[in-house]
Image (cartoon, rainbow over the protein chains, first blue to last red):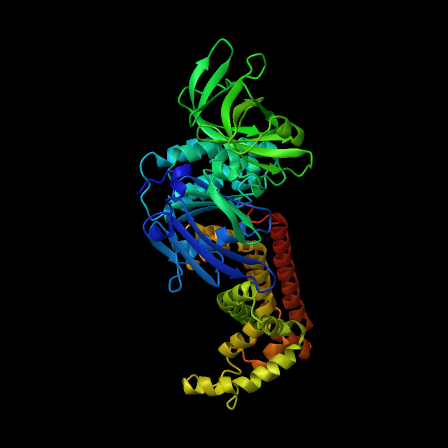
Length: 379
Length: 227
């Protein structure tokens, strides 16, 4: 299996020409007869890691996932997964013949079976012998050992969804589809399940398509993001790229920010700090108990970034980075500007007043220092 | 106590009702499945035809079946072609008529139960590699079980309780078509009120017990699939 990393530099290599060999090629045209909604997508996606399909409700993300699963039949559709055609003009594999796992929005356990019975339903039909240890690994990963004997109706919403995820994994899918698996749960349950999803992502190699309208979930889980609007793909790319776009629709109702990924390289026991290396840019963050070498994600809000012409040592700001101005665009507020900055290899966005922009004589290509007031650990 | 002919009528009634129930479950299930899931324009007309016996006088149904199964009717010609003779005034004629007569009592509870399951469990099963038959036997049957039990009980009791259709199509042949309801009618005609009382009381007690068990069963099954 070709390993496809989903960092910035590799997504561009996913050209349409190699669609039959690797990656995931999805093209659907679907028109609902009773409504004006139409889905029109033509995508090449990475075949590893988590790809978030993000958008407002009604943007067609669930419909696209259902088309991929064969639960809905697009008038025109083409879907190839690592060289295997699931759908084309001449082929339409019924859902039960597609090697996929599907986690539905609401926990959809079979009510007449126990939790364990639900898992066995999948194991029996997987068609692939269960490798030794995989069952225990998945039970352990989802933390459902203690509820296995229970009737599925006795489980809490969070437990049900964890069993449903385990059930989808036990089919041993080549592609795992998750349709807003946390949307039907309250916030406490979401926070309960998110760590399991993060573990799942780092433990199993199965590529995941994850439909969501939650920025938090996308930031924590996704490697690659597809933004859907009105049944079309608005933009797609590696998560850092999509966040670094100044007018990213991903952040429509959120504060402008960037997402960086890096490894912890140093611990400072005295001040309880950890140093993170994000592609060359080193940041100090509060020590959250992560070990050296651990990969983490941090989010930097544009409002937490200020600019100075020289590195000040007489301020309380811990993180200072040399940056180059990429461009300056107006914010919704007429007094404010968004300044996109280049660090070593990352993009940073600062939200400043136009007065400051003028005062510092900011222009494309100007080099100066960014002071980062706070860095939030996403995971 | 009960006369030999009374016992014969009881035994015949049980045989007719059991046979009819089995046949109805076999043909009613696909009809109910189709009605529960189709978006076809034929859904309305087919539903109406299935429900007709609910509103028609049994004599109307019996009259047309008599003609259809008679020597010149299309069913009659078919059965004669097949060397089966004609069906009216035979055990199997009674079975065919009863199947039509009790059809809605079996189709509707199954249809309601399948509709209540909804699409989702079937979609889930499909994503777990279950093909259509697998989905039917492992998901639909267990989840719609209360509907199937209700259907079987209603089909059986309704067949036991029929009279008009039997008279039209079956007449009054001992051991062939003389079921309990006809036997009671005969007793009353012959002013044998004692005998009529016994059979009528048995019918009341039987029907009450069956309905009692049905309703207590349904009360326990308000939750789908609850054990």
